Length: 177
Image 1 (cartoon, rainbow, N blue to C red):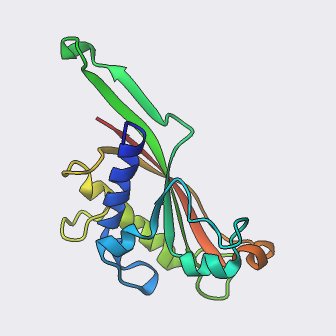
Image 2 (cartoon, rainbow, N blue to C red):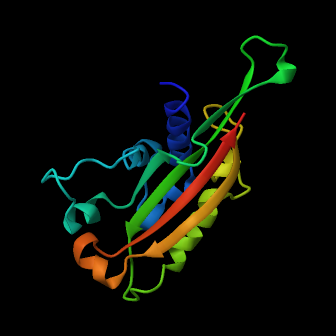
């Protein structure tokens, strides 16, 4: 795959192992079912080939898109202490876009359950019910340095007609060796 796609694929697999996401939005998902809701770079194309309808988006949700951040997507630095040769440190930033259908009538507020999902998705301290930070350092994972919640919001009333009533979060993951 390469230095851009490998970290994305690792983060996708890590997300599928997060206990909070396996019981997301009132449903229960196995790792493989959750992998089907986590996309690399883009969502599936809309049926009309142009723009997703609100009904299509409602059916796709909940979903996650894992992309490469525009800020330090990948940094490769020669390891001066490595004795020459091909020794290097690799790091970068990935972005997670997480979206689910909104619950309730309050169009102005993000649901408390969505906020709790994000908190337990990040860290639980429980290996039996891991969050992303709990999975860092295990086989087939990236070494997460920081998790930054950049945006958390709910659809604005004028957007609901076009996109449906949704809650979404943008999360930056900084990783490195």
